[in-house]
Amino acid sequence: MLSVAVLIMSALLAFQSPEMLAGNKMGLLGLILKQLTQIVIIVLFVFNTVWMISHIPIVKAMPFIKYHAIIILSIVVSAVIIYATINYVDNGMKFKNLHATLTFAYLNAIVTGLIYTAVNYVELDRKRKLNEKELEVTRLMALKTKAELDALHSKVNPHFLYNALNSIADLSITDGRKARKMTVALADLFRYSINYSSNNYSTIKEEVEMAEVYLIIEKIRFEDQLNCIINVDQSLNHYLVPRFILQPLIENAVKHGLKATGQLTEIKLEIKANETGFNISVADNGPSFPDELNPGYGVKSVYDKLELLFPGYFDLRFINSPYKHVSIDIQKLIKNEPAI
Image (cartoon, rainbow, N blue to C red; front, side, top):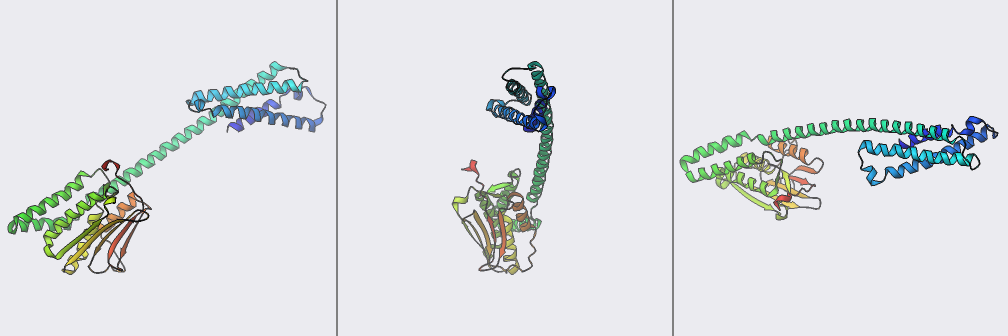
């Protein structure tokens, strides 16, 4: 934009030379070539002078008005200098009609500078409004994401809660200590959900602890029918994952393992590092996943959280061979720095 403005100004200046006004003996072609040469000289001098001044760090850091005042002044001064020089050379190393020439150069430079400033102001205002719209869209998207995550976090499997409370009611009559242990575990599970309601992430360590709390509840309910193995790479403890990502997977394993067969069920949770990030695996020895899998709310909530918080950086698979397990590969490592 600056170069266009300077070109317009220079063209106006060049075509107002005294020789154009007074006539010449060079012929039309010679005059055109001469004027083009002068235009090129003016453009190169003015543009490069203004460009160098505009890239001085102090100038670049100036507010809009001060910056463009410097630019206009640079255009005026450089135009006056170069046109006075051309006037001097063009008239046999002496000045001719210098006052008129410099006045014209000054006025055209001012007009060019003001046009350049006005165009820049319009462009700046357009970008500001565009940025405001983009910020508003970003804010709305963030609010939408937060609302979706809050909805996912707030929904607790009603069947799990109903069954846990019924078990506590039964145990309160037959085994008070188990009833108390189960009540404390259930309270811990809900406390975890409430205390972290403003945070969409949890550390792997926290998620494993809550998975263990959930398993305490289920092991009290099913006693010797449920066996759990947990292997976690301790170096991953402080990396972040979506909150409540493990409990639904383990609940799904209990549901489709133990509850589906009524037999001894072994659930194995493994979290280990790999070349691109880490892998979460929840396995059980229940029936294989069907070919036409229709995930329930719990597993779907896990996928939705990953899609919102790790878009394009995860892979969730249901695998039957060599053993049945749900596998999640997360390729984006986010470390919980305050916890270290």
